[in-house]
Amino acid sequence: MQLVRLFSLLAAVMFLLFAFNRASAPFVVVPGYNLAPIIWKMVGASLSAGLAVAYFWIAFFANRNPNQAAGLVGFFMIAIPLALWVLATVLPLAAQILRPPIAVMLIMALFVFALGSLVSVLNLAVAYFRT
Image (tube, rainbow, N blue to C red; front, side, top):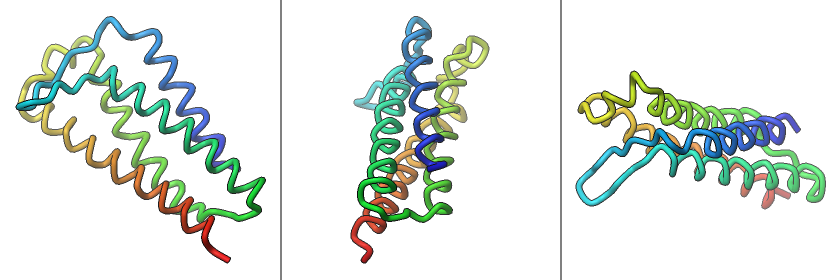
């Protein structure tokens, strides 16, 4: 139940940040891609809401308990990269977003975000298919 609350809170915070901070969205340009913090705020909000619903469904309707430690690891692997992308829109940092160390850090945050999503989804799958 704690994971439902954590992911619900993260989804609400990310949606509010998406709604109220759309004007200051600098882009990180990787060859062929435009990565904007605004995109990752919305992706984070929708993923967090989906995971909150999935954890709620697993806990109450399927009567299975997902692993709490794996759920918390997945949560923090999703929340920390999203926090880095939110900080990238703060004006002092937004002016330096194209500097190579900051751009590399933000791109690495994307990989950590993807791994955190994978950990959370696998945790749900193991809880569902466990007998």
